[in-house]
Image (cartoon, rainbow, N blue to C red; front, side, top):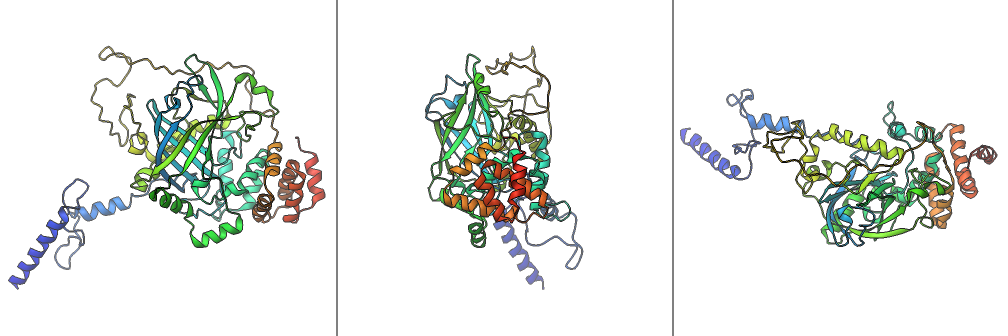
Length: 505
């Protein structure tokens, strides 16, 4: 019996030595046995002193962080942006000097559906780019469509609540979606994009990316211009209709993620050319729509595009959670030379996104490696959860006579002229014209797919009034569009025409 016990002890020692080289506890100490809990004798209870057991269970129960309210399902990749055109006349932003290479992290995502949802579901898609510039991080947080559903941030919670599953059944419901959108006629443009090929991309490589909002670029003289940022896929833009998406879901409902990983691992690096559109502030009033309205594009025949650089994705994260899941994007992360416009939706996002990341990841989330700037940060912030900045100065305030005066930044808020009165109403709505232009630009097959895709959801709406209001929007955009949709969902064209006649252009 004694010899048998000695043999067991020797084997246990060998096991410990083998594991100790590879496996440690969180404090770095070697793990003795990762297969069995420590007990009070052969048949006794588990002991609280088994730190490895307790620590593993504690950590396991805390592995999940709050899921993103929107953009929960996404895939990220690293790469670089190379500027090909010098924009010094427009902006002091250093990344727009010709030849400058700026590392980036890009996260592409669906918007409405949850983290584990199929990527074959029809949805807007996020296109967020973090530029690690020599003047701090710039986050351009946009979508794969150039417009959005709403124009004012005060409606964002309502919009998302309507798109998300019902609080009663926890099932997404087209009745709720169109009940809300029937009061948002300006969403007609975005619907025409989302129910087209953009709604279910064949791959993340085969979609465009847009900043959506107007921003301001300003130069060293303090002169500014309004600008839009448009990434055009060099792989082309391709999408699946409702039937093709259903077939794809049966084959691989992770097709967007798998395609990006497989192509980048194989050295087939996707590329996007960045184009900008530039608008002089004095020309804002020359259009029959509001250029700061995010439900509108700037037609390229009115505001031409200029290529300014190329974005290439060439490296996948080593760890999905550490990098993709913990990546945090916020429109308020701006750099000298770039400012937000007066777009009401953008103004709200500047607050909302940063606030969301503080809730989801903590107040010091920008110290996480994927979010950390490539330059030193000197912000005087005090403490907070997970602060690993390793400050070693007694001075965490400014100004101070104890330390040299901080260098004067070359970036200050622009003195944009203001006029008028406090108001809450919009002007120049023009809710349908661009949706009609978009519909007429589609090929015959693209129109057929649009009608089929949209009818699959609108046709399930039970409330006749809601259905006919939506149909009147499509008819107002384009008569053929409206008539085909009305036929597809068994609507009454006389009701549709009557409602459309009462709508403003």
